[in-house]
Every structure is written in structure tokens, then in C-alpha cells.
Length: 131
Picture 1 (cartoon, rainbow, N blue to C red):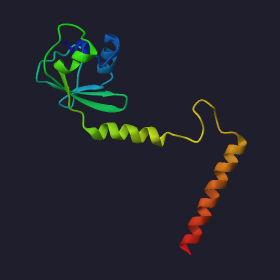
Picture 2: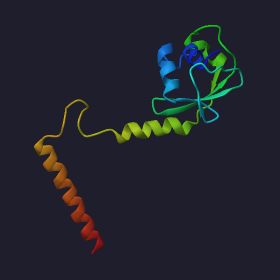
Picture 3: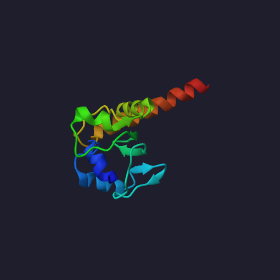
Picture 4: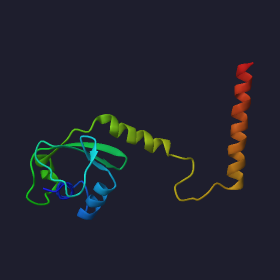
């Protein structure tokens, strides 16, 4: 079975064309090599799929005859992605948590002055600690 069709069948991508584009962009690998969408995969192969800033590591157990339901995916694929990959994504979410709500736009002049004042105070505190 083609790798793009397989990833679509086991619900890692919503459409087959998205799976094809992911292969073309180098987000699907086998043994460190980028795969073309037409590459045949077999049971026992191990894939690396980069999706949503996580490198999923998949082990193919069997080939599905067609697209399967979400509850049946575990019959065909074993996800051996390390837990650290998911923890890294959580940390990334926290690092992007700003003091402003998403979509409120650029900082105002007042916000900019507050930021500059905060940095100046932090620099002064460091100088006092050094002395």
C-alpha cells in the first residue's frame, strides 16, 4: 500500500491530498530517509511522521483494506512516540502564553513603555546584586 494512502487510512491525515503533500514536504520518513507518496509500505516498517510539531514514530502492524474507524486504528498501527515529545509540546504552549489575549493586536504605546520600564528595572536589580 502507498504510504500516503496508509497514513490517510489510519487517520493521521484528514485527506489523502494532505498526506501526499506531507510526504512531498519531507514530513514522512523511514529510517531517516524522506519518502515519496508512492512508496510502498509493509507490515513491520517503521515510519516517522512530523505533525503539529511532534515527531510521531509509528510501527506498521498490518495494512487496512480501506479507511478505518478511530477505534480500529490500533489494530494496524502501534504508536511508539516517546512521552518527551508530548511534554515538549506542552512546554511550547506555556512559553507562548503571553500577557495579552490572542488576537488583540500589537502592543500599544503604553504597553511598550511598560515593557521598557520593566527591562530597565531588571537591569538595575542586576547591577545592585553585582555590587
